[in-house]
Image (cartoon, rainbow, N blue to C red; front, side):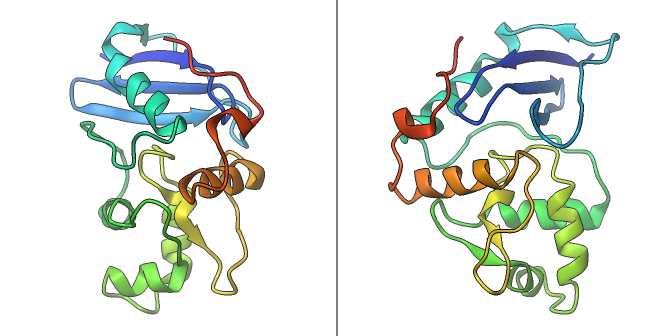
Length: 170
């Protein structure tokens, strides 16, 4: 059974979705996809409390590595890319080409970009840490402004209070 909770965050309102297997999705409610909880899901903030607490700590600059059971749904290639995204260190950025080389397929940078853009668990699976080969920011589900702020937060160039949004509520 899928459970969900909506939270306010410095990145805007987020929809969290999980089931017995783990965290399935984090959706930016102000992002490019218009996402709503499915009517078959159950609202359950208590079961998502560990996710909420870790997100709160991340946005406060106190957490660099998430410790959550993740269960993203995708193809084997997408899952391979998402696993590799999790190995990008906090505050580090790499290009799509570098990510393609890390998974052993240097010619797959476009496919890596598509998999990156399909990441169902942004922030926790840090797709925001992937940038263009020219060093410029490229697309992000929460918008480029949020991507820029997440990277600045991780580089300690931006404080939690400066994210210009409300704090997470439990």
